[in-house]
Image (cartoon, rainbow, N blue to C red):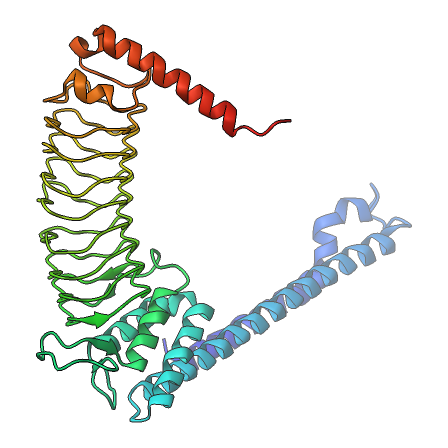
Length: 402
C-alpha cells in the first residue's frame, strides 16, 4: 500500500470514527440508560438531565483520554523515526570516515561506530561485521603491520611487527562491545598476524579459524570464547592469557608458550600436548578427555573439575597441582609425580597405573575416590587421616580469632 493510500485510509477512518462518536454522544445515553431516564408511563424522570449529562461527560472524558494516548503514541513514533534518521546519518558518516586517507578521520569513524553500537542494540551486529571487515582489509595509509621500533635485521617472516593504529583501535572497539556473546562472532578468519605484538589485546569472541599467529606476542591477551581451530601458533606466546572456553581443534601446541595461561572450560579433547609448557596453568573444568599429556610441564597447575577420562598422564609431573574434583576414570597415571597434589573430591576409582607410593606423597581425603584395593590399604587409610587432620589444623590457623 502506497503512503498516499495509507493517508487517505487514515482520514476516512478518522471521519467515520468522528461520526460514530457524535452519534454516540447524542443517542448513547438513551440507548444505555433509557430504562432509568423514563418512568413506567414513559415520562422523563426528574433526574434524567443529570444522568444524560453524566454519561455524555464520561464519553467525552474517554474520548479525550483516547486522543491524548494517540497523541503520545504519535509523538513517540515521531521521536523513534527521528532517532532512526539520526543513527542512519551517523552510521553513513562513520562508514565514509573509515574509507578516508587520513588516519585521524578513520579513527573518528571507528569511535563513531562504537557510539552507535552502544546506543542502538539492533545495529550492533552490522557494526561488528563492518569493523571485522575493516581489520581484515585495512584502508590505511600505513601497512597493516609495521616493523616494531629498533627491530633487528631479521628476515621478512620473522620481523617483529605492531598493528596499525587504526586497526588496533577497531580491534579494541570490537573487544569492548556491550555484549560479546550477544552479537555475532567477529570474523577474522585466516588473518595474517605473524610476529605481531598483541599483548593485552582484547580478542574475546573472535573467529580466528586458520589464522597465522606464528611468533605472535599474545601475553595477557583476552581470548575468551575465541575460535582458534586450525590456527598456526608455532612460537606464539600466550603467557598468562585468558583462553577460557576457547576452541583449539586441530591446533599444534607443542611449540606454543602457555605458562600461566587460563584455559578454563577449553576443549582440548584428544589433543597431543607432549612437551607443552603449561606450568601454573588454570585448567578448571577443561575437557582433556583422551588427551596425551606425556612430558608436558604441569607443575603447580589447577585442574579443578577437569575431565581427564582416558587421558595419558604417564610419568607426568603434577607436583603442587590442584586436582580437586577432577575425573580421572580410565586415565593412565603410571609413574606420575603427585607430590603435594590436592586430590580432594577427585575420582580415581578407575584410574590406571596408580600405586600406594604415588598416593602417599599426595593430599588424600575421605571424599577422594580410589580403586578398592588402594582404598583398603592400611598405609593409605593412615595417610588420609593425616591429611584430614592437617587440613583441619590449617583451617584453624587461617581462621582469625573472634
